[in-house]
Amino acid sequence: MTSNRAPEVRVRNAGSHWTIEYAAMAGPCEVLVRRTTQSEARKLASLVHSETVRIERKYSRYRDDSVVYAINHSDGHAVPIDPETYGLLEYAHQTYNLSRGAFDITSGILRRAWTFNGQEVSPDNEQIAQLVALVGWDKVELTTGSVHLPAGMEIDLGGIGKEYAVDRVAQMAHEVHGQSLMVNFGGDIRAIRSDPNDPPWSVGVEDPGLEDSAVGVVELAHGAVATSGDSRRYCTVNGKRLGHILDPRTGWPVEGAPRSVSVIGDFCLEAGILATMAVLHGKDAKAFLAAEQVEHHCIW
View 1 (cartoon, helix red, strand yellow):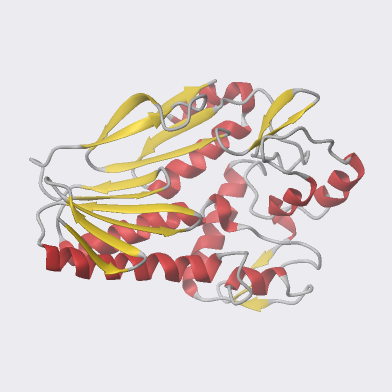
View 2 (view 1 turned 90 degrees about the vertical axis):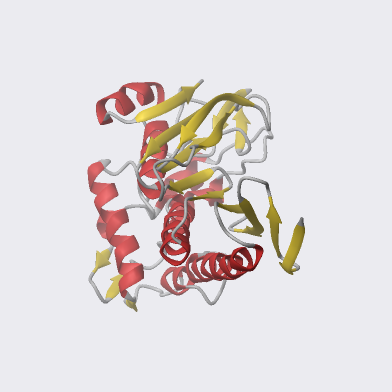
C-alpha cells in the first residue's frame, strides 16, 4: 500500500513497519516506524519532514537566509545566536579541544582549493597556505548569545549538522509516537527501541570499493551508526587517491586513512564525530577507535 502525503514525502507500508521517505540534506532521508496506522504514519511524516527542513534551512551554508550564512558574512562583527545554535557551536568547541585541533568547523573554507569529483587535480600550494591561515577555531569568540569570527573566516557545520538532525528527528518522532523506530539520513542512523521484544534493524556496512554493496551487517536495536569515507567524494593527485576529509592543520587530505570508517555509538552525532576523527588519524585510525573503546568497522 502506498500513500503520498505530499509530492516530496512518501509513506508506504513495508509489512513489519511503515516507511517515510523524502529528500533533504543533499540525500535520501528515511524514517522507519513500527506498530502504527497509515493515518498516524502520515502525521509523523509531516512532523519529521518539517523538522528536517527546519534544521537544513537554519544551518545550510548554501542558503542566504541561514544562520551559517549570517555568521560567514559578518565581516568580523559579532552575530547574535539562539540557544540551539550555541549548543551546536559549543559541541564543536569541545570536539576541537578533544581532537587537539584536528576536528575544526572553520576548515570548510579549504574546499576552495580542492575538487572531489574523482578526477586528477593539481593543488595550488600557495592558495592552500593562504586558506590555512584562515582556519582555527581558537580564533573564534563564542558566548551564549553571540559568535564572533575574524574577517575572512567561515564555519561549516557539514561535519555535525546531518548527524544532529538525525538525533533530533529520532528523539522528536519517538516522543510523539512512542514506538520503536529508525532514522536513516544517507547512511547516518539512529534507532530507538521502546519494546525490548522488538527485533533489531539490519544496517549494511557499505563496501567503499563497490557502490550499493555491503561487506557486513550491524544489527541495531538501540543506538546509532555513522560512516565517514571516500567512496563518493575523492580526487587523485599524481595518481594517488585522496579522500575529501581535509586536515585543517595542513590543508591537505589525510593520507593513509581507511576508505571507510563506521562507528556504532549511542547517538549519531557522537558516532559521526568519532568516525571523522578516526579518518583524521590516518593509518592510526584503528588504534584510535580501539583506545576510544567503541564498536567500529574500518575498511582500507
